[in-house]
Length: 64
Image 1 (cartoon, helix red, strand yellow):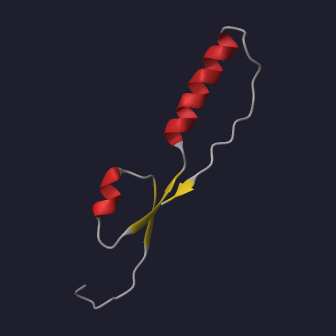
Image 2 (image 1 turned 90 degrees about the vertical axis):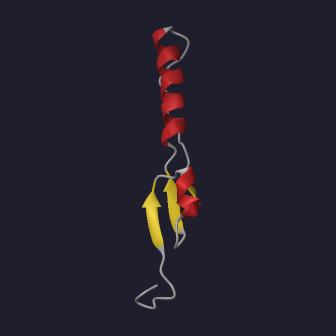
């Protein structure tokens, strides 16, 4: 604001609720770490108990 820059865009990897309060607004990419962790844990449990073979699961990233 002091430099009189009217348009500035910032981007970040990771999305936290605090991001929406920042100025200027920050575009964030959420790579889906939480969902990837849940899926990995479920797959690990299924493999250890013999209920499943390894499988590839794709977690889409989201832009906000």
